[in-house]
Structure formats: C-alpha cells, structure tokens
Amino acid sequence: MYRTVAQLDALTGLLAGFFPQLVTRFTLPEQSVEGRDVFALRLRAGAGENRRGVLLVAGTHSRELMNPDCLVEMAVDLVVSYLNGTDIVLGGRRWPANDIKVILETIDLYLVPCINPDGREFVMTVDDLWRKNRRDNPGTSCDGIDLNRNSEILWGVTQGQTSCAPCSDVYVGPAVFSEPETRNVRWMLDNHRIDCFADVHSFSELVLYPWDHAPTQTTDPAQRFTTLPNGTCQPIQVRGYQEYMPPRDVQRFTTVAQRVADAIAAVRGRVYTPQASIALYPTTGTQSDYAYSRHITDPAKRKVFGYTLETGPSLPDVRESFHPSNPDPIKEEAESGLLALVQQCICAIELIGFRLLARDDEVVALRKIRDEFLSTTEAGRDWIALFERVQTPLIGVLLDDDELGRRAAGLVERAGLLVSDDTAEFDGQVAAEAVELINQLADRSGSRVVRRDLAAVARRLRVSGGESARTLIEWLMSRGPR
Image 1: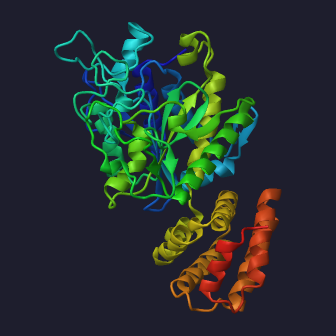
Image 2: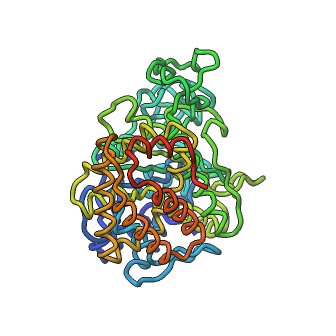
Image 3: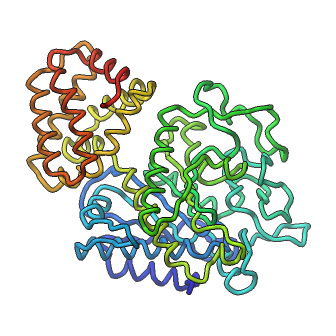
C-alpha cells in the first residue's frame, strides 16, 4: 500500500530516465544519518530562465507515510497531463490540461518526496509510530531528532511543543541544523530560486502559515524574533510577545491558504482550516517558518512564503490518522491543494516582464507600488487580491496568443515607466488600449468572477486619462474595487 524508500527512489528514477525533457532528478549534498541518498526532482517544461520556484517536501516525520507517496504521484500526474494534454481529475476537482501546461511552463517545481528516508524505513520495518530521524543521542538510550524543530528560527527555544530533552518526540537536537536532513532543505533554499515552500505533514486537515512561536501582529516592526535569544531551552521570556508581519504578507498567506483549502474541498467536500500555525500549538525551529524568516535575518535572501499542510483527519485510532488503510482520497485532496499552491505562486507581471520584455525594470517599479503603497491600506490590498485572482486564468491566454502577449508586455512596459515618475500623466490612449485588451481577455475567460473583476479594472481605467500616477495610486489606496 505504501511505497518503501527503495520503491520511491525507483519511481523517481524512472520518471527522470523516461521523461528527461520534463523531469530532472538530483542527489542532495548530504546523505541521511544512516547513509542513504536523498533525492530531489525538478519539473519544468518549455524555455525561460529566472523562473519563480516552488519547493515541496514530505516525509519530515517518519510515520506520516502517505505524503511522500502523494508527491511522487503528483509528479506522475503532471508528466502525464502535460505530455498527453489531458486534465488531472482528483475526485470532484478537475485541473484542466491548460492549467497544468501553464504551471510547468512558468514555474520550476522542486519536490523532495522523502527528506527522512531512515525514519521511513524504520516505520515500515520496526515501529510504525516513529516520528524522528534515526540519530543516536549520545549518553542516553534514546534516538532521534525532530527534524521539524531543528531549523534556524528560534532554535532551542522550548515554546509549546518543543523540547531540549533527547528522549522527547519533539527534541530540537544538539545544535541548530545539526541534522543532514534539515541541512539538505536549507541547501535547496540556498541554491535554487524558491518563492513558495510547503512541508506536507499529517494529520488534522489544516493549511498552516507563520508564525509558529507567537501570535502575529502588523503594527510594531520592532517585535522581531531576531531580538530574542536562541538556544535557551526555555520558552520566550517576553510576556505577551507577538511577532510582526507586514499586512501585505498576512494578506498573501491568508488568501493563498484559503484557495488551497478551497481546492481541497472541491475533491470530496472535506473542509481544511486555514490558520496561523500557532493556532494548532506553539513551537519553534520549523521548516516552513524558517523558509519564510530567511529574508528577515538576511535581507539579501529572497522572501519565501512557507506553508505546512496537515493532511487527513484526526481519528480515534492514531495509526489510521498517520497512515490510513485507504490513503487514496486524502492523497487526492493533498495533490489538489498543492496544485493550487503552486498555481498561486505564479506572478503574471513578473512573467510578462521576464518572458516577453526580457528585463525587469518595469516589474520592479510595479512591485514597489504594490508593496510600498497598495499593501498599506485595506482598499489597496483589495486591488492586489483582485489582480491575483485574475492573473492565473489569464496567463494561459497570454502565453497561447502571441499578439495578446505582446500587447500585454507593451502595457506593462508603459505602466512601469509611468509609475517610475509619479508626476507623469496617464495617457488617455494608453488607457483606451488597456481597456480594449481587458475586454478581449474577458471575452476569452469562462469565469464570471474573472469577468467581473476585469470589468472593475476597466471602469477605473476609462476615467484615468490625464491623471498623474500619484493621483491614480492614491485613488486605488482609498477606494477598493466595486
């Protein structure tokens, strides 16, 4: 029912061997504690460099057997869909072949199906409830480090479900990144362009996002985990501590998490709850929080939106919760949710800038307007959410129609130049061209929601001729779409 480590490795090897145009398999730099190779896959199609990247990992906790199988089966589904032009059908959720084509031709998708092969082998042969890796803890009769407590985000702060006791199931390890398995995940983040990350776990039917260690607040940037001591082997000592996150990032996490939950519910009606990780329980040193926190500890690093997916329900029989006798429906849900996450990581403006303009000056200017102006007000964030809703359904249209793509690229270029000088006036002819393009895209869309959103954009553009960029931005910040 569940694949052994050898079977997982054999299947990923076959995918890479038979479909090298889509799948590349590579060995991560460090073997596991017991000397096993750990493999990663990269899935991509078509041309284009400097793509956005998504990293999905599973098998962090040994007993959560279905998630490594899910990632490998997802890779198979993507390859079959792309090569045959067929939809991926997951229960009641159909992923059109064109959506899969857009994903593989715009994203570099990295999968590490089983980061902890020693633990998986131990679960399948000795102890089916083993959680950790297989590290020997010197001076004790206990083995194993909890790999999801070993990363460099308040490592060794024993907040909630975190412990410095070697015999604990949530033992942090002797040092931050002491384990080769977690160092492999760090290496992936260091050596590949990754914009979105998900660590797939079981169980509880949750879509989690930062923070794990404290409630989130959006008003006091001085409250940062970087001011708290690591490795204390005691909880956070600041009473009532709350971790800062910019409002734009809060919106992004909550919006994407809800879309992941919606894609899961469409499979067979199961309701996954999107929530900050601390709502499950507080902890530290987790992989998803580490992925997101890197750009805070080192501003030179890319911002990575990190999620944790907890697949499957909590059942009276804990073994059925971790490795159910029929995991197939749960794996389908998880795959649908992960496809939604990957899809949400696509950025249309960035794609147009790099793919069609072959430069990013205008993209940088537009991103600055989004992050430094629109994201600071509720109305502005509503406009951001609108753009993110419509971009994915329309990317396929733009990539398939060279003429529409060129026109979109031209408008992005002119918009970028306009916002670079906030006193410049928005030319009425440019506005008319943008409205015409929007109407054509609306005609090509089969979604009433997309058509409604595009109509809101068109209404605003029709009256924008002669306005300065500053006036237009201030208006968007004060009045949301209608």
